[in-house]
Image (cartoon, rainbow, N blue to C red; front, side, top):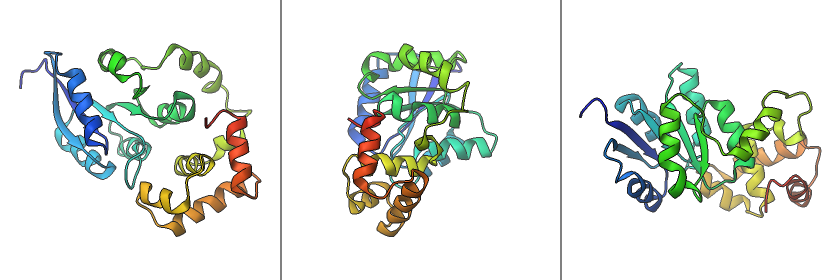
Length: 214
């Protein structure tokens, strides 16, 4: 493979979305998809073995999340340009992803128009975020003193919190995240304790009030 070819790895558990990404970069003569992973464990193995220039990764995958992969790479002191491509709006997960080491964040909704630009931006050593998020980052990332309660949740707790607040049942969350219902209930208990709440209704009201769910 010529040295000037940009090697890209895709990590997303939905095959049709991986196909969409491949179609988006197909016409770029200097880009090549060198691998695809459908879960976080495979993604981590392929990142380490294939050494891609850019990783395009979802947050929500079976088992470990994309944020977990970012943390694993950071713990191993491995620096890769990981571009998070997520169905979640920027204001829900982008800041957590960037703090965990992501090089950029864009939504799947905006991907067809922005993906190639995002890839080239992170390759140039810059972060890729929307203008709206960039403005928020100035305030949020530079000042953690006045944290809102939900910002004290771990990444997995936050992910479960959003699903509960959106009305998902414990069995549905367990299936989506490939964990047991018992584990979901354990996370729920921790979330309620950290947010000083007593019910799913309160979680939903809090999430809606803070624009964390639609």
